[in-house]
Image 1 (cartoon, helix red, strand yellow):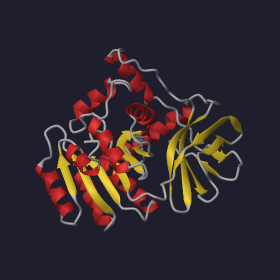
Image 2 (cartoon, rainbow, N blue to C red; image 1 turned 90 degrees about the horizontal axis):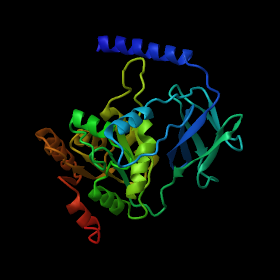
Image 3 (tube, rainbow, N blue to C red; image 1 turned 90 degrees about the vertical axis):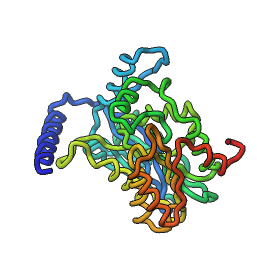
Image 4 (cartoon, helix red, strand yellow; image 1 turned 180 degrees about the vertical axis):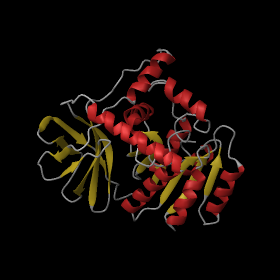
Length: 330
């Protein structure tokens, strides 16, 4: 760990040094993310970049073209220490070292998306959407993305990389049963949140796939792959997912949660730990078992969740759960 820590500090210093010597760019834009609400506040989220990298995918283009376009999504120039404010100037926040910014606004009096801009840059105005749960909501849903919803192969590192880097937004597919499952859980009133170890650079890419499949819309909590002073990649898969679950449970204190994931990335362990941290808050756990299926460790964690009195489903697909929730979709 000591060696890794020293290497991470060196890498972090080099990254910061490169950032200082990059040619300055006056252009700045805000990439909007869907925000979320607490009982008292709205959290509007986005990222300040020098430009937005977008491509127009073609289902017929080669894997090589897909590969180049996917790599291009990671060539972003984030802008730190930029003040982003509401258009009336009443609320503001400053972008962090990776360009991320969150504005915390009083929930009372705000409706619809939050219109913001970079201070003194009127042309940067953009809407930051915020999802406010319906007053009729009976539960909240947190779902993983890779293999849980999106056909990826995350249970295999090389298969995951090959699938992720050589496809595009028109060739990548969501599992059909996953779309039906989330729709059944959403039921037109229950909020849905997506938590994934995919990097924030893929946010628009994932949103495009979701929109094409008519997946229920909801805030995404993706992962920052930037260097920190102590780690090459900030946080671990479990740490990231657990922290997001903690945040969402705190933000929705009156709702029980259904946790949807898969066995390929040890979601059973992460969800067990969440259930232990938040007694009585997890109503159900639903796990897809992709590839070779659930191993002994995953099944053991599932049993420990059941021992807490929480129903757990583990299966190759979600058809049985969908039939239970909404027989018309089965």
